[in-house]
Image (tube, rainbow, N blue to C red):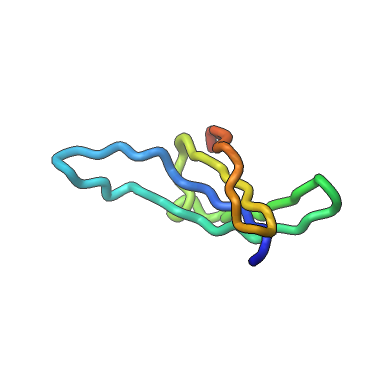
Length: 71
């Protein structure tokens, strides 16, 4: 098991289809309680909007999601 950070785009479905759903397993480094993540820098991969960010501990237990807005 490893610590990791993931990001999920908040869904916006229509007609039972969500073509805009996104999931990222973000590259990260950790120093004590501080975590540094590397975001994708391609607007086609990471469109503007709201995302849920989860931090998983070494036992792969996720944190409660934090909402972030990508501008």
